Image 1 (cartoon, rainbow, N blue to C red):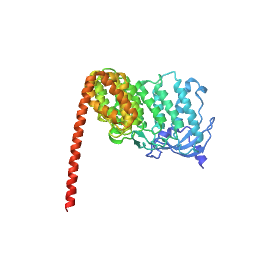
Image 2: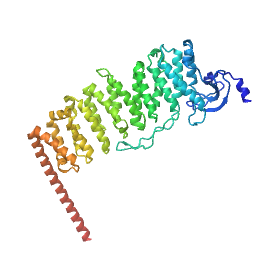
Image 3: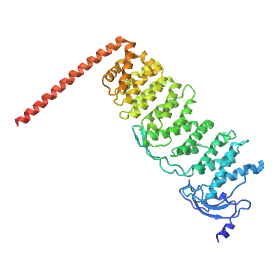
Image 4: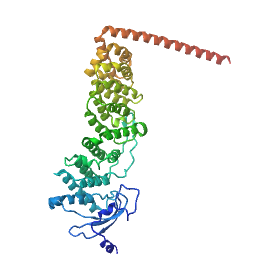
Length: 485
């Protein structure tokens, strides 16, 4: 009975994938689930009739067959064959069941590889119909229901403690080739921008940005490259892409602190910022202040600090006047109890100070060196040691030398206490070296600071002695009252 029914169904019925009149709609519209498989005759090619739910949730029967290769047909038929292969690859299989549709999945994989070669070797502009079909095929495969939700960033002292491996998409063997097809299509010189921007529109870009939250690092890497290509090629989308990335950062910093793709987005931005024309637009400066600098706030900073630091440094190198804004921003978000994060801040601070001019340095040096003094006094030896390493950087040491009359009085108490009492030998040795630098530069200033420190220390000792004497009197009075009862 089933064979008789199938015999009445036309072979090429893939158009029914987009027809919802006879279909049963399903809310899960981004994953096609295979239901039944029936073998049928396909003339020259051995094909399979598959009853499936298409990407729009409609049921339909599809002829899944091995199509001829591009080299086996004349040039006049290649575009038509390209269409047929794209439609064949628009069927999405369920990869949670490894034994279902094994043959059809292999046919699709081989077809996708052929599409990669065809797009790469294209020697004529893609027509609008081709562009539309490519974007449709890519959308069906890529824009699917996300598997697990983004993992919670389990971080202690800036170190990612997530021990489990990230979840890998079971469909990746096919999905990777889909990404490769799309990447080569976007990068191709035969892709007309004016024509393609109608289909790779703002809604499409937003879906790509949603996908970059994927747990699969391989998928994020492809999306990073594709988004960067789109930004470079489709100039009309550039402001929208920057604004959309801003919104992702805002939600991450001020609401969720959960996102898997922050590092990849910052890598895209690093390249974008590098290409900013001078003088910088006010929009770009606001992006630095409102989006990039607050990214130092989340506890999971270690996951994306390197590309963030690169972006920040790019801004300072392009406009040295931004150094004061950046340094004050770092001081605003400076960690209090997270030593690993403090080391990261000190690393970034060194890169920023290398690109800082004397005038900008003078504007922020007082609050900056109060913070550095606190770092020098840290009982965590890595924090103290990293702060002392700033004197190994020649440009930074020159800035300090030029402004030592302001800086040394701020640092001197921390240097003196470290040299005397710090528990770590390496920190004590480095402190003595820095102390010697200041002493050789200006012995008179150094001696003045030493005298003031000794006076302050004497006053502190006297105050401490008075408080101890007062406490002793109170204790004696308390003991007398207790004895009198």
